[in-house]
Image (cartoon, rainbow, N blue to C red; front, side, top):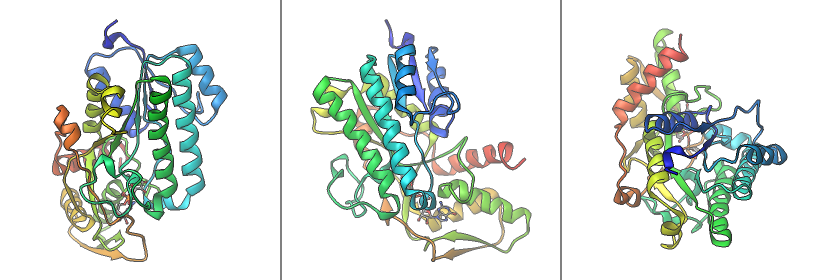
Length: 318
Ligand code: GFB
């Protein structure tokens, strides 16, 4: 049976990442896609997840489901972030194993690396130092997911692998100012300030932290690339537990704010609220490994921000 004919379950298909992965899979000719809504299947509930896998027996699983949020949500809902993510990962990965999935791709985040990791962060930097406090519970859960995949390979031979994307943005992002990441938050703030004729937009923190950003459709291409080209044997035998997925370029939050101001067309000034946390000083991925295998991002930040703002205008700001 060719890969195109396999039954693929995309967990988290209603979210920004999962929906993009589904679009990319369809675009590439994969037709047997399975998806579930949280109202139909609660991935935190072990018995329900196992029943679903017993019934559907997906041959390939993309684990894009997670409780996610920006710096404030991570820091506030610490219990929910660690519990929900640990349960989702344990349930989906174990049921995939129990019911014979041939391959699984687990998606994490660049916050798995130590706060002061050498930049750009190589895959080998995992577990070499203390984590950033604001997202430690989420990061611990994501590290557990990586180790679940690796351990199920080492004990049972499962072809389960992990991809660690950098900060993502794009279509279907969360634009709620209390729980969102920086790009959707600033798109909304500049847009609303423009139409309210406000004189200033407030950016959290000092504006000095550096972040790397990737348009979500580029991540989706990387996931399908890994599905088709990367296997557990090749990865773990090199002593690597996951692959970094990023653009390999970063900027300060202040520079990002300037770019979004220009995309939105806001004429006022930018202020900084230093009572809000900066988080990790810098998060830039070393992406040489995935690039060496043949994947590279396509969407530059300027184009990506324009796409994200168009989506916001059509779907949120109406
Ligand atoms: O995107 P963000 O919330 O996530 O924040 P992290 C990035 C930087 O932007 C921080 C600043 O320095 C924020 O203080 N920032 C400025 C803002 N203005 C705003 C704003 O209005 N909203 C937000 N949200 N930030 C998350 C982690 O860290 O990144 C997660 O908490 C996950 O675990 C995710 O890894 C990708 O990059 O700081």
